[in-house]
Length: 293
Image (tube, rainbow, N blue to C red; front, side, top):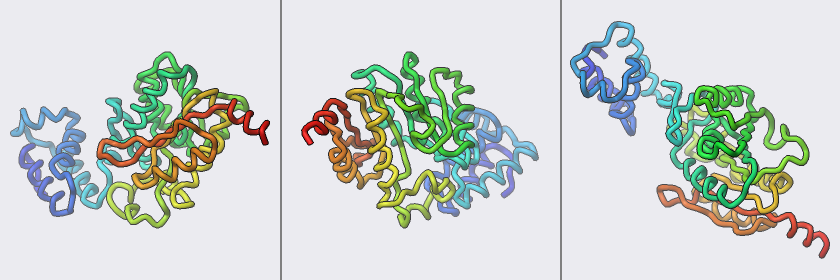
């Protein structure tokens, strides 16, 4: 691919991405070229006759080639915007997705009903925790991830964004927490894809960490573990919220109800698919049930 002017470079890259099967060749090419030039999108439109130097041409060509193989744009540029926050990403974490913003929206709604700290399990880049912390500066948010590299990345994102009301811990789900710690809200976007799901061989997920995507028991193993144990970490009338697969709403609702959660409901994502299930937990009901038994 011969690169010279910005408009010529874009056209050649778009053609190559189209041939490679990209779903969004124009957007991909523009984002990658803006990254190489360290310029905003408007620069490409305003100065189409500007030329790339040799280093920029080589870098752009390399990125386009990697994108043709399917490597996610977010990993290529090292950043993805979530909730209007520019987050650093890496192959050690999932790429934040727009559908997860529904989880943030619903969590913010429920935060108005109860006071207290917020817990984000499987925090990854820190996207959910940082979005909530940015909107609720008077609340403290804790994010936990199993992988040390994810915890380090989330902490780096918090520092870059100067969000100070958040703490990131490393460990398996609730393990890093002190006994007796209580939260008003517990939110999670855990692994929920079945091990043999064909989507794992398609698109961006081919490059994302399987440990953050796949769960046993038809994708429900981690959701079950969290829902069972969250009861010990929720304050009175606290809320548990999950993002899950489009076809898991009924199963997650049934799980919540079997564990004693009430006001259980599944909310849809922007495409109209079941995406977030939430429920409220009352410790008084738990004690009453035990007394009755």
